[in-house]
Image (cartoon, rainbow, N blue to C red; front, side, top):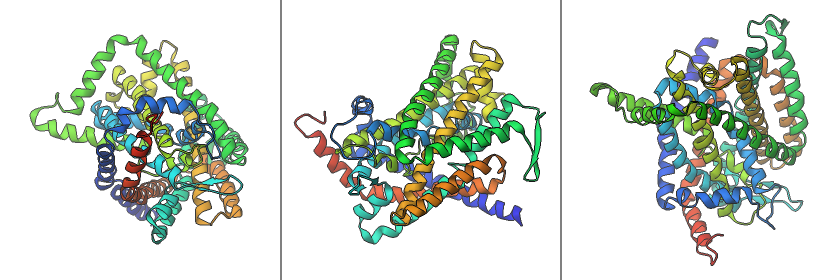
Length: 469
């Protein structure tokens, strides 16, 4: 019976995350890129400047940088290390090129999400802010579309609680620690009908306490922690990858050649060239979308809380999240793997990236593995924090601001983190993945319907005497 249910869920998951949704997300990105005149390229320098220079006098709960870090905390996760490796193993080096393409288009989508989040957010008398797809659906498209906003909020709360924010991340952290400290499971204890390494148990308890200490403090504490941890973990990971690149500088040109050749099937035999291109395109684009979450509707929930009075300004800041996540961090992972040839050695998942680090860094294998474990732990921990915030805002919308409902969700979330290391039911992860995909549909409908508003706001902002400065 359970096997049948699992099989049905897998079929639904494959359908939800199949070609139609990926094509729809890409189509929205292409449409917005054309309608906004390639804004994500023309105004990227301005966006990067706005990212580190907070606006003065704007309404909101956290700074623009704090809102971006909260969004990045959920976006930058194990997928940047494990997901990229999986895409390269399945699609070859060319998958990285198509990941870049997905990110470039996704920046336009993320920009539109940021604009709409500020344009239609709701600020209470006490200064509390709530916004995101549910509010730009309801207030932008009209009250008659509230049912669509409710659907988005329901799926969003489910994604946070059922897996993407809890089980998968906690599993990733506990497995990383166990594989480094107790790979042979010599120190075990029987719990919940199974045998677990003590490293898993201790990691789970410590992680639960740390998550509870942060999320009980609400958005401002999540934001303050994210503003410290997210830049630190991103800089640490990029720095380590740069050391790998510099120590193997002679391999960099060859890696880029492999990426371009793989993207266009230039090395495949005539009959297999098209198949190689389609596979690289499929894996790269899918991983790019999964990684940067452009179009899924999660990031605008955090963007809505930014202290700003200019929707376009926050839109520009929001799109830098996709740039940092995919163009910088995923590229660092991908280049490291391609340069060291780790994608073609019969490994998968974190083992691929681990092989690249061990063979490319000027450290011992133990030190290289420890660095990777540390990065995985930080990436997964911040994802837990970010998705808690998203889930709480969805619950707040569903229950019309009822704080008791939010508190119940918060404690259920902490409980899910506690039991996460012992959850191995793949069906739970599949359900979470389905919810994640279904979040995107209401959001994409709203972005298309309100693209005229985005274009109008953009034109008004850049036609000011200071040209949007």
